Length: 514
Image (cartoon, rainbow, N blue to C red; front, side):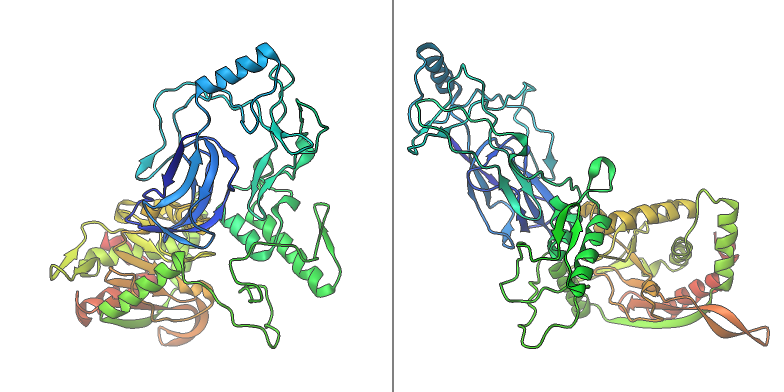
C-alpha cells in the first residue's frame, strides 16, 4: 500500500493554526475521498475538514484539544492495493476456488473521482470524472484467529459499518465470530450498530457534548430528522430536572438522568463550566478553561486594543419615544418587511459617519498615518455560544433601511449558528454594539481593533423626562461613543454623538441629512 499524508490546509483569512475539536475517524477505519475526518476550530469558525485520499487510516496526527499549525501533518492514509494485484487475487479465487493468501485484504479496483469539497487554499480534485466503486470484499477472521477472505463467488458480505457519532466518537459495528473453515462469509445486518444522529451544525454537536446529551437518543425535529439546537437544550433540561428530582427520565426511549460516559477535554475530577450548573460543592477543584480558539482570539484582540488605542468614552441620554413610534409606523405600512430598532440605529450611524468620516477610519502605526475608509463596513457585535463575534455588513451605506433590517437579521442569525465564513467576521470600519439586550444602561466598551470608534446603545426604559417644560414619562436610552483619540478630538466625537442622539429623538432629521 502507498501511504499518503494529508496536511492541515490553509483555512483562509491569514489563519495559521486550528484546534482539533473532534476526530470523526480512528486508526484502522476506511475513508473515502472527501469524507469528513476531523472537526477543527479556528479563531473564526468551526470547520469540518474532508480528506482528499481514500484508503485505510494509518495515523492521526494530533489529539483532541491540540492546536495544529497549518501545513503540518493531519492524517495519514494507506491507499488500497494496486488494481493489478486485486485483479490477480480475484482471478485466483474465481478459477481455483482456493483461499486468498493469509493476511491480505482483497480490494476491488477503486477509480479516482474528482472532489467536490474545496476549502480555502486547497482542493481535493484528482482530475477526471470516472465513477468510484467501493471495495466489495472485506477480510474476516476464522476461529483460530487467522485472517482469510470470502470466496469471490459467494454473496459479498456487508462490511462492518463505521459511524462517527459526535457524542461518543467512532462506532464500529462488531463482526460476529464464525465457524472454523477455509472460507468464511460474514453478513452484518444494518441493526448491528447504533445509528448515528442526523446533525449538521457543529454548534449543536458541541452543545450536546457540554451537556452530556447522547445525540443517538434524540429524535430530531428538523427537516429529515435533523437534530437542532432546541432538541439538545430540551434534552438537557429534562436531564437537569431529573437529576434534581432524583428520578430518571426517558428521552426517545432511552433513560436519561443516570451517568453516561461523555468525552470531556477537562481532566477527570475537574468541574465543567455550565450556565445550568449550580454552586460547586465544597472541596471541588478549580475550573480550568483552556484559552483556545475564538476565546484566545478575543483575548488577544482586546488586549491589543487596550495597549495600542488611547480610547475615550463619552455618553448622553436620549429620548427614544419618537424612534419607537417611527418604527411602529414603518412596520404598519410594510408588515411583510419589518424594521428593527437596531436597523434604524444602524441607519442613524451611517448618517453620522457621512457627516463625520474621521470616525470611519483606522490608524496605520507602521506607516504613521490615518486611513479613512471609502465605504462603511458596519460591524454588529453579536453574542454567541462560542463567544463575542462581530459580523460585518460591507458597504452598508449602499443599503436601504429595509435592506439593512433584512441583512442584519440574516447575518446575526448565521453568526449565532456558527455558519458565517471567516471573511464575514473581519474588515469592519465601525461597530454598533447593542448591549441594552443584556438589561444594562451603559458601558465603556473596548474598540474592535483596528477600528477607531464604537457606538454603544443601552436598554430603552421608562424614565421621567422634561418635555416642553412639563414632566412626562418617556422611553429613554443611553448612547455611548468610544473613540480613538488619535484620529480625532472631542469636538468631532461630540458632534457625532450629538447627531446620533438628535436623530434618535427626532427621526425626521434623517430625511434632512440624506
